[in-house]
Image 1 (cartoon, rainbow, N blue to C red):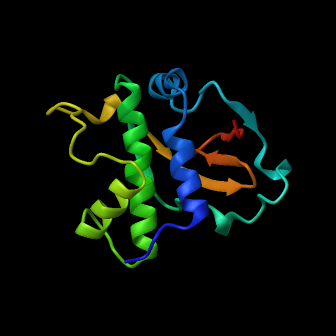
Image 2 (image 1 turned 180 degrees about the vertical axis):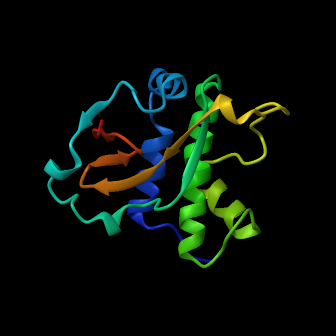
Length: 148
């Protein structure tokens, strides 16, 4: 069993520590959140696209879900990325272990039984640890989450 690296633990902690109002804004408007929007090309050390954390992952955010479910979605997808790096796919026992290890609570979030695709906004999400900050790259925006 591989333990999380310090960087992975830091990323999970930062996501888990996002203020509730920030998560609520993310739920309401996944791309136009109340964070500093930055140009990816002008961030020192962030030009290496291969270093992004969640490549080719898609996150579906329902515009009406509560903040705790947005955070759960981010941790869920981060766990998939970490499990994939260990050679695991899907919702296998290793993914479940990793998800719980980084603070996720899989199976406890109920989004409702009926989901219409038009209720969701598909966002391609990448996360990279850059020094003391987190760089979250969505389809159209780059968001810098500064260190507290």
